[in-house]
Length: 170
Image 1 (cartoon, helix red, strand yellow):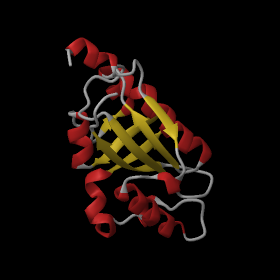
Image 2 (cartoon, one colour; image 1 turned 180 degrees about the vertical axis):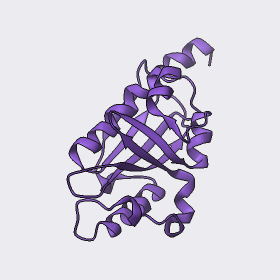
Image 3 (cartoon, one colour; image 1 turned 180 degrees about the horizontal axis):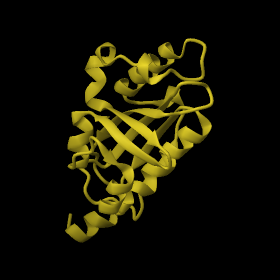
Image 4 (cartoon, helix red, strand yellow; image 1 turned 90 degrees about the vertical axis):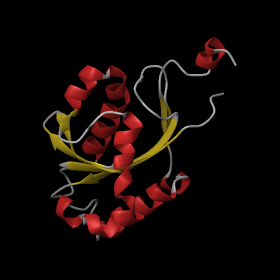
């Protein structure tokens, strides 16, 4: 396959669509969702303090914890799989700074995070990376974004579980 025909297989823009939690392919994301649900204990979502990293040790490579700071987001904890998949350090970086370096990244990440913060509802997505995001080491992904906060009306962190894979382009 020539490079020209190869690049025709890559969509112009990244494509993400919501999926049901029962449609998650990744066992990591299914486990992450079950863990989050177990911490809700009658509330819409758990608090940041309810999340105990030791309890999800095998999943930590796939986790990021993102703090909501006004209209911006800060990556507080970022698992190794996520760092390797993006090829850039994310920990303690503001999303607004990352978007400056990689505009395509913000085009799909910001709306996902804002939706979780605005609705207080968890979100599961499946996606295919396009030409709008150039510095990634994967072609397809599943993401699970889970709200955390002090009360049912306020989301102050988003816990994510992400699974990245490279598949043949078609």
